[in-house]
Length: 308
Image 1 (cartoon, helix red, strand yellow):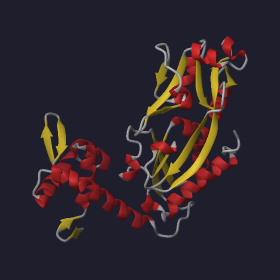
Image 2 (cartoon, helix red, strand yellow):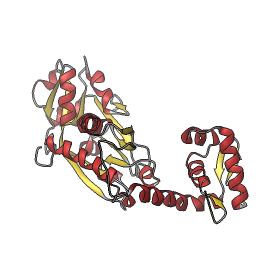
Image 3 (cartoon, one colour):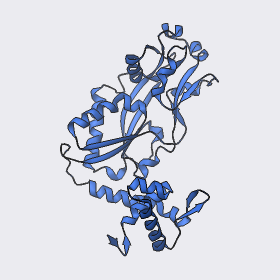
Image 4 (tube, helix red, strand yellow):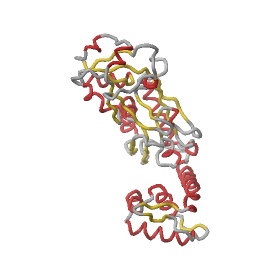
């Protein structure tokens, strides 16, 4: 379809090219052949009288014009998608749609897995893909690459609707054979042991299960830092190491591994998770149904501010 002489299909190609900066990656993302994307890039260059992407070594670099177009192209496609999705009617029993959620493995294990199970039962045509947080965690939502982001509020963008999900207490987790875990450890105990940390890097600074405690404690050379919470249990088994994790996740781990939970010394430390969607999707009935399902599961699991 053409608009003022411009093939609107090229907007989708341009958007992907500017995000991936790769003809082959764009072809894979759009499920078309690489020659087809090369032809589309040639047409874009003719349309804008600009190279759009320039090869420098092994890397494709966007031109100044292309960079100036990127936000406008993304906004245009988001607006079009919003218009198509805002039909005012959504029947989960018959709908066939796909959603992408950005979330940590803590979120998946603690409540998202239960939400997805219910969604499978209620909406068999709904497909969900969950992706881990990226360095600039606010950007995938801004660019329309994800439908929902579930992260601590400080890692979310400031311009889009946000829903509070859960606030829960952080606890100490260690192997049952660890003598320090036989009773609630003191602050000195925690300072002396080797800690296993789950870090992921967000847009402002690294966040982890250490929360506020880590800011007041030097990470020793013997500490182990991993990229997700799921790796923690096996790194604790048969050792005197400890880790600091959300309480609900610790309880799940204890059901599958010989681990023990103890409270953190001193004042309680909490982690909060918030859900965010793009502001142009507020009237997307399907997306809002998905949000309501997730909120309902969190509520039924009693993962609320007062539970800890």
